[in-house]
Image 1: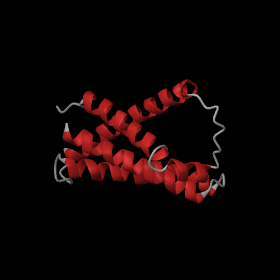
Image 2: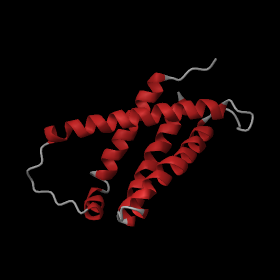
Image 3: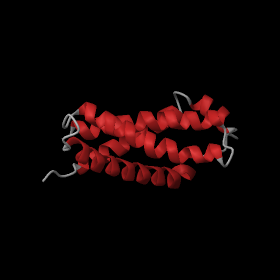
Length: 139
C-alpha cells in the first residue's frame, strides 16, 4: 500500500507559503495592493501578522495533504500514466480548476469582488499548487 510522504506535504505547504509571500510582496506586491485597494500606513508590524500567517500555513498544509491524497489516487489509476512530475502537475491543475477557481469565483459572481483581484489570486494559487504538485510527485 502506498503512503503519503508527510515530509513532502510539509515541504509543499512551506513552498506554497513562500510563493504566496513572494507574489504578494517583493514580486507583485504593488500590483496586489492596488488591486486589493490596500494602502499601507507605515505602522504595520510583522508580529501583528503572525496569527494570519499561521492560519495561512495551516490552510497550505490542508491543501498539500489533499493534493497528496489526490495524487496518490491518480498516480495509481490505470487511467493515468503513473507516478511522476507530470502527473503531479496535472493533478494540481485539476484540483485548482475544479475547487479553487470554481469556489472562489462565487466571490466575483455574488459578492462583487473585483475580477482583476480574483484573477490575481487565481494566478497566485495556481503557481503555489503547481509547485506543491511538483514537490509531492518528486519526493
